[in-house]
Image (cartoon, rainbow, N blue to C red; front, side, top):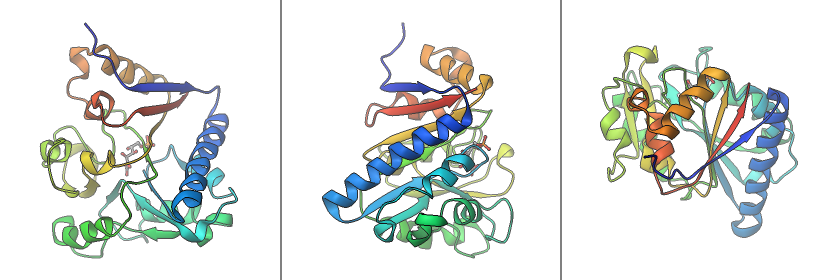
Length: 237
Ligand code: 6PG
């Protein structure tokens, strides 16, 4: 028996069409928030998949001066490092029209994510709640944000009743130490998107949908099976 999932999948023929569609969707969300409340907040992922989406979104005409952009997770490196998600967002999203947006980083310059945790959490706490949109990605191992299989704070990060807003994460597949918003923090949003490409990731998500045993250790399962916020998957080959 499969559980009903609150997930809708939008499939596109290529990455360009996918990036355009998601950029238009997020821009629409931000415009709506600006019209309703005078400010808007979006949390985005790093990695390679969102690059075209960032470039597209940066060209959307909206009142970026009142938009705050933060990250769903960060590798614990300064933005001079090419693996920094802040570096990626600054170079690809915070340009053109979006250059006027305010970026709220998770990396603090402390030696470890544990040492930087309180400052990073205070930055997230200072943002208006809920987010207007959260854009997740997914790795080939089923991780999303920094919810890595075998992560040292994975259970705490996925605890829907947990109170931690932000957590450090160390995991074999993570490379450097990470910091991540917790699942309840990510779900504190008006809209949730999962941007993924390729056959492998499509099959992985299909396994999660079917509730297969092979999918039980994929951390993305916690996002797909929660009932708090509908998930919109944006997929292309
Ligand atoms: C990160 C992420 C991460 C990412 C996936 C997918 O900082 O690494 O935010 O969760 O979304 O690893 O990465 P790709 O887009 O490179 O496949």
